[in-house]
Length: 105
Image (cartoon, rainbow, N blue to C red):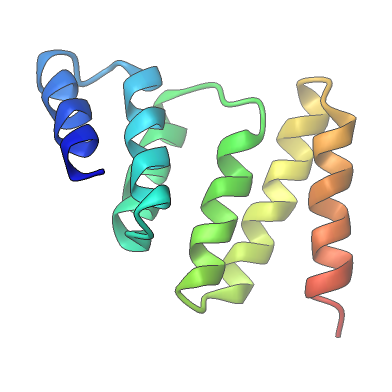
């Protein structure tokens, strides 16, 4: 896993604006359960890419894993907005169900 992370980092050194590589790096951090680096990388990705919703779900899950549930909920809500705006109602509904089930008060 570490080798794949290093490969993505090297690719970003060559082209730091490549959002596909940045998303791939975030995915590798998530696979290795390196939540803090996953969060930092996804937040960077979201400032550079016109994500259609998937990265918001990944980011929310990473925040859940480090115990920041309120931040995760906010990100799911943003993911609903973005998913709907890009014509992905199924993804938006998945995020809404997660909020309804896991964040009900």
